[in-house]
Image (cartoon, rainbow, N blue to C red; front, top):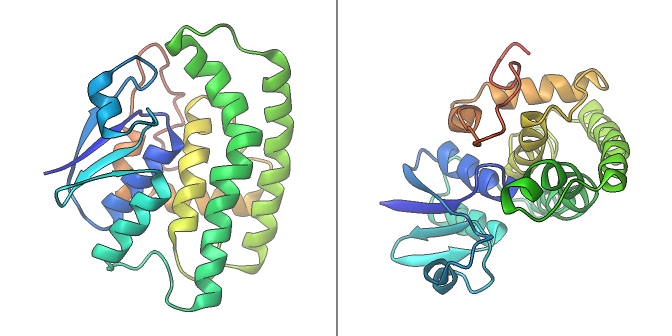
Length: 221
C-alpha cells in the first residue's frame, strides 16, 4: 500500500496526489499535523514537512523529488516530456508555482487565513493578505498569456506543470481567493483540470473549521 503523509491544504501534497491519481495509483492518505512535535513523523522526514510518501519500500520526501520518482517508475501517462527543451519548460513552470507563486501568493493567503489558526500561531497579517491578493493578479495574467499561446501551461499536452499550478490554485479556491472572472483562458484551463478524474479527491477535501465555498466542487463554476 502506498501511503502519503499529507495536509489537505498543502499545495505540495496536492501536487503529489494529482500525479498519483493521474497514474491511477491507489494511495492511503494519512493526515499529518506536521506543525506538532511528532517525533515519529520526524523520523520519516527530519525536516518535519509534508508530503512524505511511503512507496516501494522507500520513504520519499520533498514534493518534486516524489513526483519525479513516480514519473520515472510509472511513466504512463507521461507528465514530463522526453524532449529536453519541453522537459525544461515543464520544470521551469513547476518551479514558478512551487517557488515564486508559493512565496508571493499561497503563503500570504492560505497560510495567513488557515494555517495560522490551525497551528495557533497568531492572527492573519493584513499586510501579507493584501500583498498576496495583489500578487495573484499578476500570476493569473501571466498564466493567461501562456494559455493564449498553448493548450496547456507548458505546451500542447497536459504535464506536471499543470498539476503544480492547479494544486496551488485549488488551495486558494478553497478559501475563495481566486477571481475566476479575471482571465477567461485561466478559467477554462482550470475547468478542464477540475473535470479530470484525478481531481475528484481534491474536490472532496474538507478542513475542519474551514468549509469550502459552494462553487469549490462545482465542475460548472
